[in-house]
Length: 307
Image (cartoon, rainbow, N blue to C red; front, side):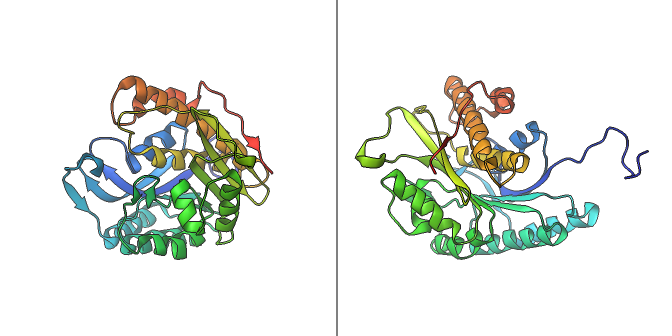
């Protein structure tokens, strides 16, 4: 046995704590994040904030919301069993109320206490273009004041970025300025998961394309992929995107062009998942059918440097 005490041929696995919702049927929250992360070879400790029959977009659902004490108790058990020093990152999504949010940030602090290098990726789920806010009153302000400043990586959509940065986003320049403003609150990396803006000079963005943007102190990059239309857009795409981006950032790093490479890999995986979902004709993400293409996307995406 080697001097480090590990069996020959063993390697340290990247380990993530994912604190999100859970549904018995469908793919949102942890159900949209854990399996893809595992397919990429990462270990995941999943802590569920709710246990529902299905996502609430169906209108009717059953199940229960977990209490903040439940989250703390589960992490207590994990820490007692294995410790937290092997955790390299915490991923969080929808937060039903401030109590859950505080419990999530307590978990982040506990993981960072055990491993000061651990990253926190916050998906600030609050609303979307055309829908407005769909979270409880007070959550957006709490998110901006507490969750975002605690994060290393934030993954807002365009609507969420505009609110968090307190500015309107119409042009690409607006989006870049908003992302830079959000970084002043604390995060090192901002991923805008969906972007529809005009170009410099007022030109309309290319029709039939959807963009993502990543912004860091080292530079900004964007990708554009074919837009896939759905009669009913599947829920959980943002949860999947945040998980993929965190996984690739852990591999590529947050410095230099690491986030750009993570952006390109994420965009390819999202495109593959959407293609499978469209062909399946189901309103749920086709994660099982797309699993091989998530690992090795057929569409090779390149990130365009903007600055």
